[in-house]
Image: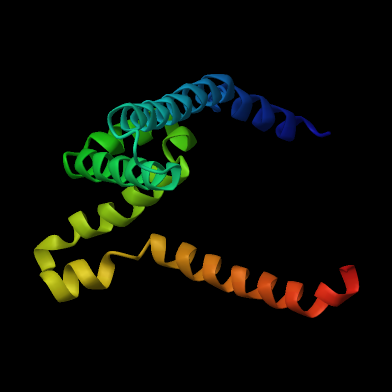
Length: 151
């Protein structure tokens, strides 16, 4: 390797920020785990206070509660701070999806209901919904076609 390239590589190594992968993974792990523990705690509270309800309804109530909490925290700007700190740990499926729907809605509310809220509410979550529906249809067709082959 020629000398100018070595100098450049050394300069890049000196200026490049040090990797914080372990810290980032730790933050994502404990925040994501905490969100899941909160969800489990809510489920346990619902089981305790509404023991006559079936498991499916308790799970639905827990999901709705987590979505409401996330949307409220997003509205006050708190969930964005959690996301900045925890990274991927804050996108636990239910809370992350609620945040991705609420954020554009809050951001574009000044543009009015139709052009602001309705037009932008699914800018982030829309492709996820479309891909989820499309892939489930594709898998359903594949299963339908090959069902006889596996029986």
